[in-house]
Image 1 (tube, one colour):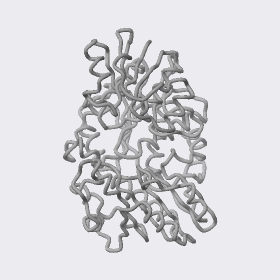
Image 2 (cartoon, rainbow, N blue to C red; image 1 turned 60 degrees about the horizontal axis):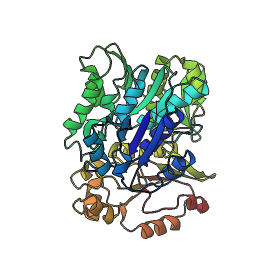
Image 3 (cartoon, helix red, strand yellow; image 1 turned 120 degrees about the vertical axis):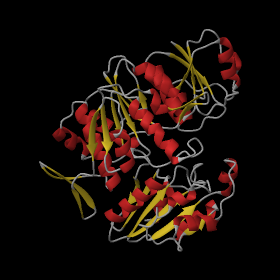
Length: 450
């Protein structure tokens, strides 16, 4: 099969390109800019475009398939040429479905936790040498790519993102997968540029639940009232398996899971991660892994990249980097760190970076999100607000939204970094939450602070 990627440099797109190359397909692509790690990885497999830009002459009737990424625009000249030639154009999730329609599809959905849960499942399956196809939204230790596709594997595990599929396909990605087995971890309003009301956002999860193959199995977090209502009110003829936070305790900074075989020390912590673990266990059991084997494997799970990732630690200080950016994620992460390190000062830093978090109308959703922190810091770049063509937000608005009079706010990357490196972090747990990089913060340099 001869496939051309329009916008091959994206995190998901370049991984799919590599997976299809490894499957034996002929792969080419274009993009106007490609950065590392995508650039280096495409180059390693001989898939990096010779020059950046859009080239309609690359689009010919010899192509079997076009895969269109979200980075491209509707008026992209390669896309227009493909449409004029009548070529088959797939979105990323649409093509994943085509590759997996004869497999048992396991789809992990939810506003938060889906990357971690997918990672847990893949970690357990890999530990027990169970081969599956997969697509996950983070680079996992021990896995070469974020996408793996074969002809022979029976199962495929897919992280089910609710964002749009492509510039010309406005359906949420997870509506296209038609799962046999699914999980919903939680629902908290996000992507307000696409889903302008919370009810509209919730509807996407109703559609996802109803898109399951009749007779399929839905695993869901009954501790989330909205998830519980969405799943339990669905008329789809599916089996429903609720989960909740498992029994556990914390001792000397370590979280122990209470199991029939005894107390199991974990590398991860926090109620949200324990909920994730409970959901992952159900899914693994549906895929043929029994409870004891799950516990054996999960004990050494350290987390997905950028999800509560430990940067450095000594006897009195620990520093984490976390992808948390939406209000529910920020609240869960900050609360987890405080509960895990009760005797330490918790410093929580949050970068407002996404379209939603920089939107003045959405800021109120952050009320109380940093309350568990002893020291709370918010950074945002006014330039990012301009780039997203939003109305300017002020420090006063941000302080009012979080409802913390002592909130520390920075808008200049260098001033934020200078503040950070001035801190005495003895007896401190520092967590840096963002989907960005704080305007160029050197995370490696943080190790020198200890």
